[in-house]
Structures are given as structure tokens and as C-alpha cells.
Length: 419
Image (cartoon, rainbow, N blue to C red; front, side, top):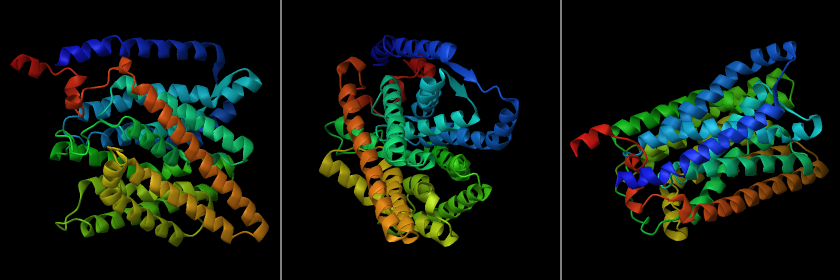
């Protein structure tokens, strides 16, 4: 069966890669420069490089290893993550610099722009998690490019018309990516998905590698949430507070996820899926609510509630979405990113209202609700459009029996030798 897939990829994947990369090189040739101010460059290096490394490790190793949990899809989980990130970061740098190009005639690359580009890329990886194993690499590249385009557009709309701070718009990446991926999964639903695919399983080896991804994400998430805090707030204390709050929320969510995993298990045992993903829910929720969280116990309470929602969602809502709405969410992005993200949005709303007078509270509530509605509307509509675009047979989606299978895309010389 392998040759037909190799042929279909040969005439679709390489032309797409070469076309996109050539276009990016041309754009960088004429419009992109590296920041020239020596003092500014040294300041950016001292303040951003270590945190840029942390975000880079999260995006490549964290998401890459996390995607290797499927027993026959570990090559694709890690390899396609690297391919998507390498392409998507370039696209994100260009899109985030469009406004600068319009006003100044060029795009200036610095350490901050690379961090923002990687965070935009993380949003696309979240969306891809919903359809992991059911697409080919051409699909994944198109998903990443369209999702990042929508996410950057969403940020521009919120900052331009609602005057939302940049930090708050970028942290909506969890909500935007989750609901984009959810709509994508709904449109690309395959008949027969009600029954678990025979290859949609975890074994000891792939489960271990996936937990390594969880550990990378868990360790470096404080940097992910704090790296851009100083863009909006020059007070260094706010950045440190974001680190402390994220760490506490993650710690509590890890403990809570383990506890509820055992409680909801018919056998009274830990569920590896919950440990891989629900332990991260506190980092998601606190990231969205971060600007309003000032006390450690609040961060811990957010971590507890996020893990509770994520674990119960993975146990009960994920199957419900499959059977009631025909939405097959491979990685459970709704429970891990979508619901904790909305929880963080609600906490931010409540905390801001509690600290404001009546007039300010009402004004903030209206703008805050509009922020969520715009984000959900744009992410879900673009997810639908992308899904219908990818349903076209021109892209040669993998056959049902070849889903969650590396052999459709990768060479296995030892298997060829046995034939």
C-alpha cells in the first residue's frame, strides 16, 4: 500500500514546501531586516534569550514528544511537528510584521518577534492536535498557515477596536487553537469513528515518550506565561509574579489531575492520558487570567479548578462530543486547552470586576465578553472554512485504515526487506 501514498505526496508535498519557502525567502529578501541598535540588541539578548530558549523547547520538544503517544504514529507525531513549526514560525514573523511593513516599509526581526512567532505557532499545534493521525503533512501545513493567519487577525482586531492589551490577546491562543481544531475535527469527521480505531492506542514506549513531552511543557510553562509580560508592564515584579503564579497553578493542577483521574476510573487507577495532558490545565488557565491574579492562593485555586474541569472533560465530555456531535478530538484539545482557557477568561473577568468601581466594571465586562465572542466566532468560522477546504480529494487524505499509521508517510527499510 505504501507506493500509492509516496506518489501522492511526491506531487503535493514537495511543490508546496518549495513554493512556500521560496515565497518566504523573497519576502525576507526585500522586507525583513535584523534589529541594528546594538544597545537594544544586547538588552533583548539579556532579557529574552533564555526565555526564548524555554519557549523554543516547549514548542519543539514539548509538543513534539507529546504527539508521539499513538502506537503507530510516533514518527509522524514528532517529525510533522518539527516540519510545521519550521514553516509556521516564518509565516508568523511575516504576518506579525505586516503593520510595521505598512508604516515603516520593512519588518524588523528581534528576539521578541521570534518569541511571539513561536507562541502563534503553538496555537496552530493545539488546533492540529484535534485531527492528529487523520491528516497528511500537506493538510497540517495548510492548517498551520490558515490558523496562524486567523490568530494574528484576531489579535489585530482586539487590539485595534477593543484596545485589548497585547499580552491578553496572545494568551487567547489556547481558546483560539482549541475551537479552531474542534470545528476542523467536526468537518473532517470519518464514518465509523464512534468505535476506537485499532491503531488509536498507547503502548509503554510511546506513552513514555509522550510523558517526556509533558515534562518539558510542565517545566518551561512559567517562562511561556511570563516572557511577554514586560511588553505591557515595565515593572519586573509583574514578570516574577507570573512565574510564581504559573508554577503554583501547575503544581496544584498536577496533584488534582492525579486525584480525579483515580476517582473517575472504574478500576481506581491512574489514566495516562490525564497525566499527559490534564496536569497542564493549570498553566493554560493561569496564562489567560494572569493579568488579574495577584495572590498565590488565587493561582492555586485556578490550578485546582482547571485540572478538575480538564480531567472530567477528558473522561466524560470527549466521548460525548464524539457520539452526540460527531467530533473526534484525538488529543482532547477542548478539555486540555479550550475549557481551561475559558475558565481563565471567567476568572479574569470576575477578579477585574471585584477590583473596580461599578462604571469601570460594567465597561470592562462588556469589552471582555466581546473579546471572547470575537475570538470564538473567528476561530470557529475559520476552522469550518479550513475543514471544508481540506475535504477536497485533491489533497489525498489518508484512507480510514491508514489513519494513525506512520507507514503511509515514512520509509521503513526493515519492513521492505521482509517483503
